[in-house]
Image (cartoon, rainbow, N blue to C red; front, side):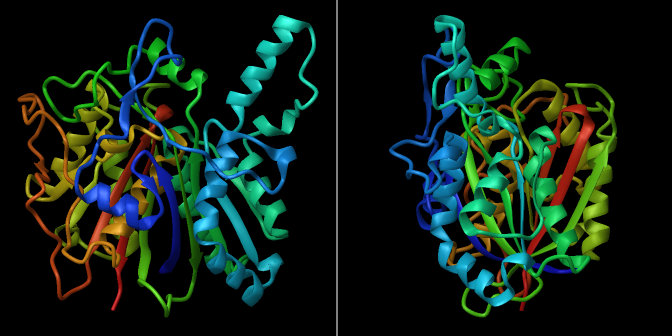
Length: 397
């Protein structure tokens, strides 16, 4: 079934809102990736932080930075959300989100207070760190009574949220679904990846022979998904989705790329299109040794060396549970009115290809999307435990 993504709210290191994010995205502006102290002792890794004040929540008892990011994205498309609620009713509008941090940053600070003072702060609420907190917040704020839940499968969380949202529409359980993902910067995440020796001291360098690890970022991306085409804006659809779980290792991908290849092939089959019709691929592209090796092998085996592709993580950092939805949002923006010249997301790196990897056709900023026909864009997300998701978005006549 074709599901239409009729609105997009987005906030990340590139800015807030469709226009600002698109402008900086297609310009390859990585100025939002800045070294920050305070996350990892003795280090200042670059992080993709959202700068400036975030909106105060209408439900202060559900406060967390994670919910503030989500609320910032939701406010951008609130009229469309309210229209869907009015049209379908609160019981027919669902919420499916992906996250991996939820309110763990606030919970960590409150536990530190307990360790130092022998009691929790008066404002402490266990619910703020529950993985369900983002969906609970949206449902409570909007007074929705349809299905509302969170998927947490590490870096594929919000990619799976889009897939799951479409399933709710297919099954007739919802007429509209607010779907996407959100993750906020926190010490637990940065120190966890640092313990794995996976955090780079420089801006990440995907698919380079000199790649040295990931950067972490924060973001929220929220769509309104329905069965019906938008009549007052861009008609952009989720045409295909594929998922797999190869369970090769708890934190390393299957080096053969088997699971990634399976997810991409399923997405193509689900969309009913052949590999040559894909115009662009947003790579997972974390700039870790193992992920880039696996993904380049899988992509090359399915598409050869001609498909235009890039990793957007040097522009935003790896936003973990939000990454699948954020990078789908970049595909959405590529097809929207904010990209009239058909720019592609440039691949920022040092240009020194790893001779051990199969070659990929990485976007250098000169290439453009075709015009005069429907375009098909793919986005990959891969996660710990061998969890893989591939999405295909397209504009429809």
